[in-house]
Length: 294
Image (cartoon, rainbow, N blue to C red; front, side, top):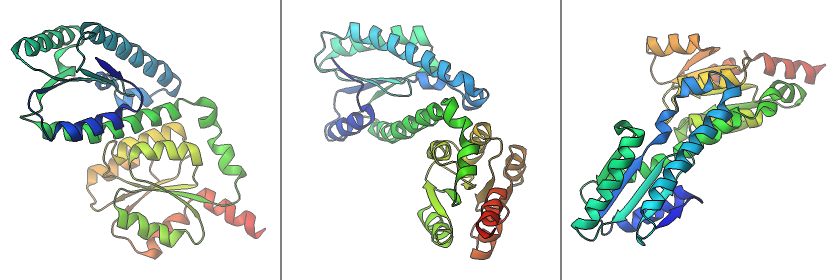
């Protein structure tokens, strides 16, 4: 049995590329401990994030030990431990006896952590679901990284001070559509420093890193959506100045964005004038311009 803990997302992606060429006999067992983490609960108190992530890792380590002990004599088994706490077992069963042995292990784990967190797949019949899982692994790792950034108390607490001491305004664009992100950046980069994030997970990490003066945040994002991301950003910085972006004007989205502290809403597609008008409303951008002219 081989335990993969270093760069497991990359190792899994590489192995899966080989497996899909000849998936016969391959079985996959996923134990999704990450589902224990609920976004709203986790960000409700930033002081508790580190402890909750630590508890998740302890549970993941304990599960890995149980499965690894049972598979110590199986040379072909691959046991992955991901950064989000999920554990994944891949094994190519050579006969019915080995398949039954894997089912027995799966059953024991299922009884221990609950059926809702456990799934099993015959890769020869459903390789597509595991290809989707491989892509999701990277996004989930990015989410854990964003939570760890939120748990860095001194860094979060210095956001306002870092923004105040800066001479040039920074604008964070959170947009998974390449055209929209490039369009906005090309307009704004003449006067502002631009940071672009493609996901909500990246947005949280980049926000804490760069302490931007304004954020343009798309509502429809892969992984954490815009409203989830908005809540996280406002938890990290109650003074964050954020405009939401969307191709639609669904009332529920607008109400939700307002409820969670968005400063405004910009419908896509938008022109240069509307974009610059939104930027001009940022109190931090205004303050920097006043400093530069005084």
